[in-house]
Image (cartoon, rainbow, N blue to C red; front, side, top):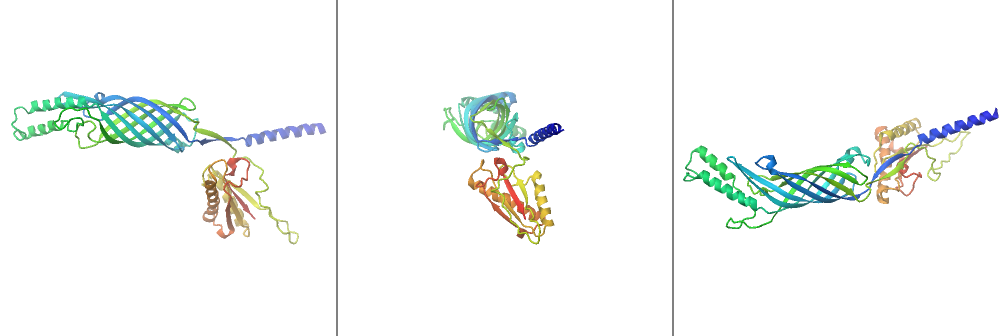
Length: 400
């Protein structure tokens, strides 16, 4: 009979241990790491103009180096360039020209995937928006000069027979005005006599766009970029009285020099034996045979770098408020902590203070506990109540 009891007890112990292991199983938290990357892309450009879409398409390329210093925000230095095109159509006759440019720019990037869905290196697609600007350096505009001569000759032939601008009918005057507007009045490569000269022009530009990256390896992604660029009216040599635009569509690869994420094991539901040095020992004097009352302790945990109460922890504050209401003479001490594994002593000191204060504010403002019954303290990362870093993002509540 004793043997049967021993076997049964052993099996029961194994079942309990197995259940505990399952209950106490660790979870993985992904921690962002600042990192550098390089990017190479090639594609096409469309320069906004007055001829057919296909006639204003040209090749485009870009190389860039960037640094993501936050899980959402980063910066990128890129050099974009190759070719742009311009064009006009006058009475069925098409004039086209192309020119070269290079445009260094600085962008501020925003990882929208991390912003909305949090850090997750297993995500296959990342969407990043950017906004920036730089300088557009253009040259090789001789085709525009030649097109300008052709346009002037066409206009001159259309005007043949008119004594001057005022001599025609109102309809003719409107037509003449239209013809005159087609002249390339903003050529940047003519001399004072209107003759061709090889020249380079520099103008500022701004841009906004989006990158969609597809993960193919731990440090490699392939992606698509779309960008809208705006610059001065003289970019395509035509005077329109408004800014000129060109649009880039690029495909390419990106390589990250350092793993962008590390992992941390967390066990938010694990029951851990507290260190004796942290729990204040309360000595209650026994009077007339009364038994001393055990202090009530609750630990309210926070997420990394946060002082916000999460829904899974707020019920503990409600439980403590109920205890204080049922024990009118009880007072509570709230001590805030931060984990030593992240941040620095100055940041962690402020975090721990705010974690204690937010619990006090919740007790006072939401549950009506008298503030005089609450004292707060904070330890930063100088004291670690747990052996697991992630559990030290905590406010410990002790009521007696």
